[in-house]
Structure formats: structure tokens, C-alpha cells
Image (tube, rainbow, N blue to C red; front, side):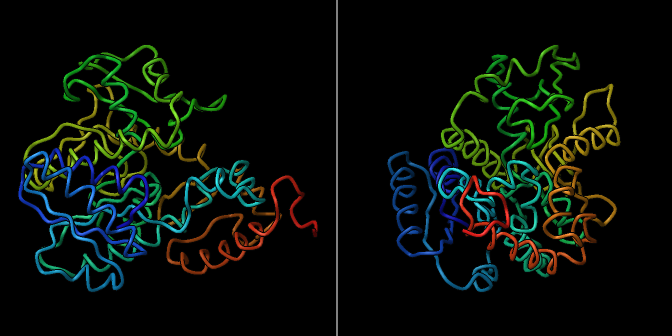
Length: 350
């Protein structure tokens, strides 16, 4: 689902990495976008001698999700672009800069939630991978009873960067805990990502991530898309893979994992158990603006303070069962603030 930069990168890497015969259906908002992605990917696959076919689709999502031979779905589409601050700066993007990206959680969750609910009714159930803010969206899906295998990106990108910096041939010796917030150098008071090699703590994980953090985000899609293609190839081939994924089985944040088929298990360092790993990621989630826990969405203090001035009844968060109404309220706020240019105090008429 999706034809943006990340979806294209996934398809273009899958075209040259996957040796398993597979048909990839690319769902786009427009026929031209879907056709362009499929032409490039199919041509790359043909030139590489790979048995991968790409077919464009538009229109009825429910019909696509009812395809009889569906192995799984990767969601790369949401109603809130991470690039909006560059392409359409406004009072809304300034609010996100102050409050944290976590404020966009409801907008990131909608397509994955729709797909997940459709897939949950099928037997056997196709797998669901989510690329849209999986560190927080996947726990939300799990809290709503929607099964999700994992996400892509975030800790996957960070671990690949650390693997390259350490000169490791794969990630079997590497164990990293990291959240979406760690894509950038953490703010003062926020813990850095954690990493171990052969169960020995890495003294300065930030140093391993310096090159990644200095690279333009658009370029990083080429790495994220490639790691996603390796993951999907392992899923289709039923090949064991030691990797790192955000939101595995609906957990918050990112973890080292072992994948075999659709069985996903954590492979934490000996000194750390699962509750401690989850607690680390929840602290990072608060720094990103939102925490999903015990069936409730809670906004961190910076986000809550902003909402208290703008949408007071959401300042304390909301139960996951109230997602639709919260999305509507935040959507109305977004529409209003998008109409106000960046740099103007909110609520001041033009």
C-alpha cells in the first residue's frame, strides 16, 4: 500500500533481492504512480533475472485485501507525510516540531488499522507489516486487537547503520534497542540508543550512528527500503533471519529479533529482559510525544501542554476505543493550523 519514496525503495530492492517467485500488487492513489513504480521494479527484476512480478492497482482496497492468494501486506501509506514540514510548512508543522511527532499517531494508524482488520478475518491470516510510525502505531493496533507482525524502518535503519560501522557481515552478533526518536541525536535528558556486540555493551552507540544522522532523510529511504526487502524475502522463503524491527508483535519501540516464517522472537542481550527493554522504549516514546500503554494513548508533557491550549479534552490522552473521535478532533485542528502560515502565533487571524 503506497507509492511514495519508501514504497518505491522497497519495490526496487525486492526486485533484485527476492529469488522466490512472487507477484507484488502495488496499490496507489493514482494509476500513473502505481504504473511507474511497477515498470521500474519489473524492469529491474527482469534485468536481474529475478522471478518477481509487479502489478499496479488502484481503487477498492477491500477487494485487494480479499485476493485469494495473499501472503501479506506492507503498509507504506498514511494521511500525514513526514515531509510536510519541508513541502508545506505551516502552523501545523510548527506545532509538531514543538509537541513531537507522536501527535500524528491517529493519522499514521488509519490505513494499517483498516488493512489489519480486514486481514484478521481471514484464515489463514496474511501477515501485516507497517511502515508508518510503527513504534507507536503497532502497539495501538495490538491494543485494538488487530494482529501485526512488525514494522519496518527506524530501529531497522539504525541497526543497519551500526552493522556497517562495525563491519559486521550480518546482524546476528548485534543487539540494539532504539526508538523512532533515535533517528536523530536525542535531546538532553533523553537516553541514547543502546547496543551490544556479542553481549558486550557498545560504549558509544551514537558514534556508530553519526553518518546516518548526518545523511538527508530522503537518501535514507534507500537503506530502509532495502532492509524491508530483505525481511520480506526471508518471510516468503521461510528463511531464518536475525535482524532488528520496530513494533514486533505490537511492542512499543524497536528490538533485536529473530524471524523464521512468521514466528518472531526477541533476541535480547543476556543482561536485559523483555520488561526492561519495553520500559526503555516507553521512555523514548515519551520523548517522541506519545505513549500507548494499558489500552490508552497518553501524550507527553510537551504535547499535552500544546493540546491543553488547542483541544483541551485531548490533553490527557484518550482510550484506544475512542480513536475515531480523537482522529476527528485532531483532524479539525490540523485543517485549521494548515491554513495558518508558519511563524504566526496560532489563532491570530491573517
